[in-house]
Amino acid sequence: MDAAAGEPAMGVAWLSSDRGEVDGCGGSFWAVKEAISTEKTSCGRKKNPPPPAITSANPIDRSIMAGPGKRRRSRPPYADRHYRYNTSRRLVRSALLETINGFYAAALDRLPVGEMPALVLRLLKAGLCVGFSDPVSNIVLNTVSSYSRRVPERKPAVALAPKSESDDSDEGEKKRKAAAAAKRWRRRALSRAVADTSNVKYWPPFRPLLRDMPVASRSLEALVAFLTYYFRYLPVSEALEYLRVAGADPLAAVRLILEDRNSSGRSFSFASQTTKTALRCAAMAAWHPKPRALVNRPYSFASQMEQVSELLDADGGRISCSAVEAIHGLLKLRRKLRGLAAGVTPPQFHLELNRPPPFVPTKSLQSVLLDRVYGFYLDALALLPTADLGQRYHRGLLKAGHCYGPFKDPVSNIVLNTVWYETVFPPREELSVAMVCSRSLVLVTCRSLGGLVAYLRACFDTISEHQAMRYLLFTEVDLWGAIDMAWQDEKDTLREAR
Image 1: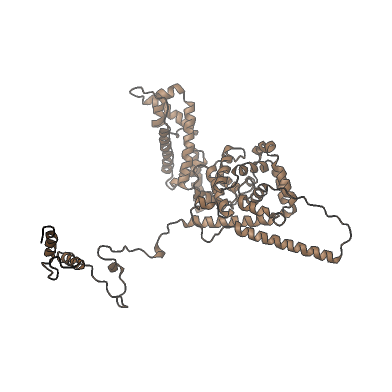
Image 2: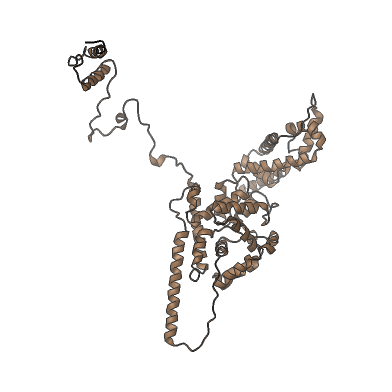
């Protein structure tokens, strides 16, 4: 053999030391492969044992079938596992969709879809339940205002000759056919407008898919977007809960949140920029074809609330073709009457509330309180002299400028604590700054709120952190007022226990 053929021959000869059937280069490839596997087994590696026979006495053991070193992890039964989604939020979304489906059924009963079938298409595209009236009226107004075609004039009936009984029967048959056709239109439109509530997820649908979903689903997303963009620190879960309590009425939900957050002084206003921004965000979240129109039209109707209510309530709530034309006429007065909407109070703010006591989660309550305490620090910065603030008082403000003290006004306590610390503990060396960092103000705000909560809980052993924050919220961060409120509640509890 030559040298080129010597190397394979040596390798095969090594293999042939234990296997006599493979010698030289005469063995086939499969014989060499079998010899290699046999040699590895003889060197210490063991082959996997054959799977056991599956019989009635020997059921399947998945840990053995998985092989050595790959034991399958045991899992609890499906009934004992924790669900990965929030069941409560899913139920709330399902209940809200059922309520909104009822709104669209009521709106289709009021609209003249038999005489004007094009209103059905406008309802499916732009008939959202967002606006400054009740949800059903909002659907009707948004649908009618987006109907851009000319309303046909109704010709008066002229009696040329007395009608016979056959003519009366023919006319009655035509009316019955027209009523049946209108009923079919409503039934088809309702099947396309309502959303399926059997398999509702707790998370919102994917935004590109929302565009082709029923208008009821898009209305729910618009309502949630309106509340979350109108109020700061309002998560989606709380917005859904407020909508459930308010019956999917956006302005009623706004009133509930204002009362729960003790924001009576910050009343709802049609003309505020926050309201306009929330409406615009709601229109964009629901894929409205004309978001700017959805923002402008409610202001036209809000400035003429009495006329709009008369048109909607005429004929027992059934809207005629002439009423549709009259509503279009009100839209032409938008530029002249838009400024009058600033002094209009929504009807939802005049109703009495019959609901459970307010409850705001601790995290949202803390965010609202931090925002208010931060505003107190900004007011204190405005009261301190500008020249001395950058040279002297910035140190005392960040180190000891807490909002609690002998005064009931938090701003006065901040100024007093700042001046006191600078006077009693002067700095060793002068340090002047050009500005006070907002991050430092946030830190001292958190420390002040923590001190207020700790003081209340030290005075009353039975109250929790959430209750202490709630007392501070309803007393405008007045420590002494919060103590009085907690003391009064404790006395009432003891009186009821007796």
